[in-house]
Amino acid sequence: MQINVTFRRLDPSDALREYAENRLQKLKKYADGPMDVNVVLSVEKFRQTAEVVLSGNGVRAAAKEEQNEMRAAIDLVSDKIYKQLKRYKEKIRSKRGPGSIAEPALLDISPSPETEKENLGIITTKKMDAKPMAVEEAAAQFQSLTQNFMMFTNAETNAINVLYRRMDGTLGLVEP
Image (cartoon, rainbow, N blue to C red):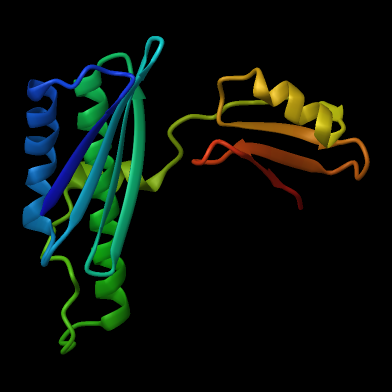
């Protein structure tokens, strides 16, 4: 497993690099074959972000987490990657069925009861006002927000639309 750690707007720290590598090295037992793991640790004002992209053997998993503490962000993002690998393993197992000749890329991961409970329900509910406005006006208002998405009523179509921030920094629009 090849782990690459990149620091953005943050002084490179061997201790932080080793912590991230050790935390993600534990995923090695769940993957079979060569895997590339790219870790990006960045700081923006008071937000500390850890982003992980794992790829190899036909598997691709990505996760991003923001916290006040970098080590907490690394812990949470590694847990997210673990859950994605577990879901992928279960998906492969259900498609191939028992006794299949072809083996999945991941080794056996036994689900824990706590993890199964987390996947069953909605964690939080947030009510939002969908104000009527033009798409251009919504995009201008969204640029000033720190959230990753914004709901609004399209003034032209009178339908609810969602404006979201993509991973590359551009905006995306979801229309019904």
